[in-house]
Structures are given as C-alpha cells and as structure tokens.
Length: 283
Ligand code: CAA
Image (cartoon, rainbow, N blue to C red):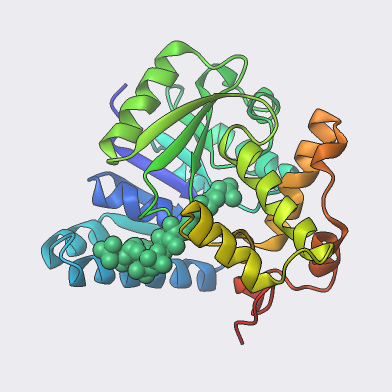
C-alpha cells in the first residue's frame, strides 16, 4: 500500500527525531504525546535540529518550512488512528505500549501498518496483543535519528511479506538503510552494542581504567565516534540497564548480567545526559 500519512506516538528523543525524518521525506505527520509541554518541547527540538541542517546547508530554509508545516500535533492518541502508518515511540515499557495499541485499535483503518520503535521488547508479543499481527513490525531508529543512517526492521513471527516489503520501501524513502533482524531479544544493534557498554562499565567497576581512559581507548583505539561510557550517558543508563535485563532474562546467559555499578547509578537517579549526571557530569 502507499504510505502518505504517519502517526507518531511520543515526542521525546526518539519520537521527535522520527517525526523530523518523516516530515523531511514528504510524509504528513501527526505527533501525539500525553502533555502539551512534551509536544512543545518535541516541536522545538525538531525546529532546532532542522535549523542546524539549514546552517550546515544540508537542507534549504524552504525545505525546513515545508517539513515543519507537515507536522501536526495532538493530545488525543485516537486522532492518529486514520494514518496509513503508526510509529509507536513511547516509553520503553511493555504495558504502556500495549495500552497505546489497544486505545488506537478501534480508530484504525483495516490496512494501517503498526510499528514500534522498541529497542528490545518482543515484536511477536506486542503484535499478538493487536488485531493485526500480520501488519505489525519493529521499526527501530538509532539516536540521533536525523543523523544515524540505520533503521532495524524486525519481523514478528506473523508479519506478512507485503508489510515487510512496504516498510523496506518506507525506510528507503527516508534516505536510510534497513538491516533486517529476526525477533530475538534486543535484535542486532543492541545485542552487540549493549554488552560492549556493559563490559565498559565492568572495566570501570574493576578499576582497569577510569572513565576518560576507557572512552579514549575506544575512541582512538577502535575509531568509535563516542566512548562506550559517553555513549551510555547519551542513550540513558536506565535504558541501557533495561536492555541488559531483556538480554539476561531472554537469553538466560550470565554473560549478559548487568554490571552492579550500572544498577547502582540507575538507583541513584544518575541516568546520563537527560538527568544531568551519569558517568560524566553535565550540570
Ligand atoms: N539533528 C540533526 N543533525 C545533527 C543532530 C541532530 N539531532 N545531532 C548531530 N547532528 C549533526 C551535526 O550538525 C553535524 O553535522 P555535520 O556533519 O554536517 O557537521 C553532525 O551531525 C555531527 O555532529 P556534531 O559535529 O555536533 O558532533 P559529533 O561529530 O560529535 O557527532 C554524533 C555527534 C553524531 C552523535 C556522534 O558522536 C555519533 O555518531 N555518536 C554515536 C551515536 C550512536 O552510536 N548512536 C546509536 C546509539 S544506540 C541506539 O540508538 C539504539 C538504542 O536502542 C539504544
């Protein structure tokens, strides 16, 4: 089916980035969140990031204005029901995601495709709670969405071929590259990235190196754009811990045991950039 309208749930770090790239690619976007404040902050971030692209001459001011004019906001999740494609980018909690899809269901067109930007929750399980598991997929963007070229496409056990082919085309139309993953805990990127970050926290915990030496080692020694601890702060330490727990529980292997220091930081509310403190101090 031809996708023209996209409803995005969640105007946070991921949701506003997803709205940014869909609107720039010419889609009509409706963005929803639970508070006006979140919507206002989401729109302001999109505007700021598009301004940055104008300054860097990646897009023209006219392209930015056209894209911004294609983004509509609403506090009623049901308003996005008539969209051709739904992208759920709400808080990474299964109960919240399931409730959103349940609320949306009576307002959806039969052909609408449902997707979730979940970084680790089972697509098969989320899909099974909807009326259309064959038209349900994981659509996992990377942060920062406007910059990162990859989108993971995850098929649940029931996802049909037509939905998969449609979503491959959608990813392509965004100027991004798809990597297809089967539905196993944390998919591909986080299955590999998060154990590395967790190992960096163990390296710190065991005193092998300090925060700066660990990050410098990986940046200059392995050409990573950010060191693993800096990246953990960027992703959010609560998100990192949640993904490690999904790996640990889902694969039942002690190699995925979250580092106790990561748990302690999260318990302290040191969640990284978003809380002002993580492995680095941002205050
Ligand atoms: N919107 C638009 N453009 C942006 C942007 C944004 N939010 N953030 C950065 N940019 C642009 C900048 O304008 C700049 O553009 P030019 O190349 O034209 O100069 C470019 O991106 C690089 O940015 P900066 O110069 O400000 O800073 P940098 O060189 O340090 O790069 C970075 C910043 C792109 C974030 C880089 O450090 C990086 O790639 N880090 C790793 C990010 C990463 O690994 N992400 C994946 C996280 S895992 C994940 O997302 C999955 C999950 O589920 C947890």
